[in-house]
Image 1 (tube, rainbow, N blue to C red):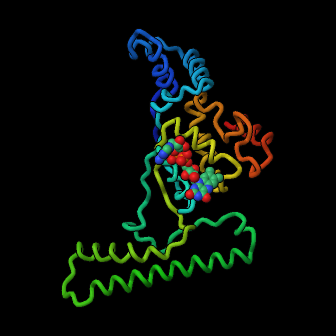
Image 2: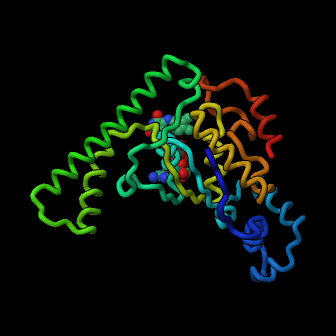
Image 3: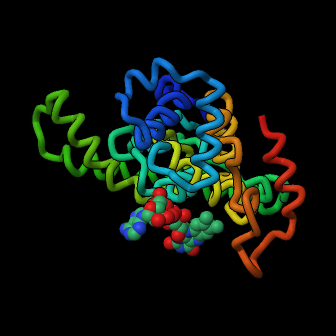
Length: 250
Ligand SMILES: Cc1cc2nc3c(=O)[nH]c(=O)nc-3n(C[C@H](O)[C@H](O)[C@H](O)COP(=O)(O)OP(=O)(O)OC[C@H]3O[C@@H](n4cnc5c(N)ncnc54)[C@H](O)[C@@H]3O)c2cc1C
């Protein structure tokens, strides 16, 4: 998988601290921004986070390019509604030989892997055959077909043929989340209860934002970083290891 922070609000920590300071200040935001030192911004952000005064954290956004993940993973990702997404379309992009993601447990089990690979190959073949048959049926009887008509018929064929695609299909997505959404997302998806793939994506996203906004994301990670595990009887029971991992994450 590849996770890249492609853009973010400039000076995110200054923006958050200034927005918060404005709430308690008689002067305007430009003056606050101008006078704000890095050190006092960090101090102010720590106070905000401790108080749970979270609306200032919504003013900064982070955009990620994510590739080499499965449709299973993006389906889980897009459940996070307070965010923006653009995903490579299976309706417009013809993918005869689609790439797919193999779960580690399957790749480590030769018999399971053989069945998995056979299923992927069957799906690829079915896609090619169905899209071909549909295209031919749309083209049937037509004497002359323009390039534009050909494109339209192909699109019509592949948008239905894609129903045979597996969840394992590799996909690409651009995601934008503000810092408040990200903190919530990390609480849920950096948790050991989250599936390995989205957990991996969340860890990579967290590393990216820690580099550019270390104070905002200082205490980010699964919920057990800040308090008791909320998972009850489903808890992984590994809080000490988990806390150590996220305290040392760079
Ligand atoms: C370990 C794990 C297992 C899961 N298993 C399942 C499962 O089996 N089946 C399943 O369907 N989903 C499952 N999910 C997905 C889960 O139910 C959430 O849809 C997903 O995690 C997004 O969380 P969210 O709604 O808090 O986030 P967001 O959609 O980003 O929302 C953020 C916050 O905004 C508020 N909010 C957003 N929309 C509304 C609204 N309409 N009304 C009121 N408040 C709102 C809530 O406070 C919410 O927490 C699972 C998630 C995890 C982490």
